[in-house]
Image (tube, rainbow, N blue to C red; front, side, top):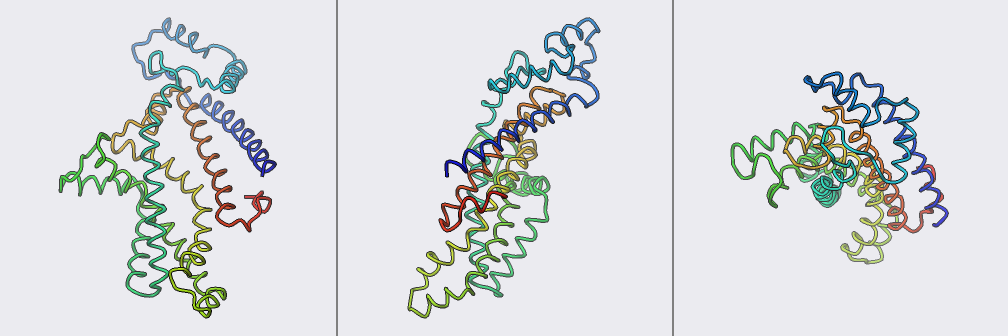
Length: 310
């Protein structure tokens, strides 16, 4: 286990180095600079701003300085928000994004597994058909379109929720629903397929022949073995929810890290873009790492070495 964890951490550090380097040079390749939109900035002031943020230095010096700051945990100072550290802004805005993401992940897993399990148990019946139709719709409809529809129907027309904002418990409902719809649909289809395969396995028939009660069969054999593909999907699902929250936060005007990320791209705020990109990269790598560990904990028969290529 220790060897596996150290190897994974080494690959994570290498991936972060590549991500940070690529993000830095891609930002420099974009035409313009953070002060392009400032129409009233005189050439003299522009020179002073470039000197303040080190943009007048050679590319390699800027790169070495930025990478050195990352090693120390310093993502620099925002070029648009006056005297604001990127690290501080990420810490302040990530709270709302974290709440949204955690709720979306929990709802996606619980609802998706239950729907998939029901569809598998009642295979080729009405519940199965309805669940699969909803799953197809959930996968086909983009989250930003679903978010707009939810706003129009439940907030604007019915008035059950606020159109925008993130102040009370009810304000979580619409953005979480929009963000978790696609993962729920995918998990439902994945669970249904896995559960059907397990339900027709020989050891399930043997358990029935031995007189084992159906609830015990379901929870001890069917669910435990059928849930493994879902555990594998948790990593990619987390990535989808994290990246998807960027759009959802913008639509619902949630003051999270996703909204700041979109604004930083519009403003060409180099340090903010690079800081949030690296932060997202760390989150996604941690999610994948924890998924690999959880996969083994769910089924101890699986060896960590067998997943080294995953």
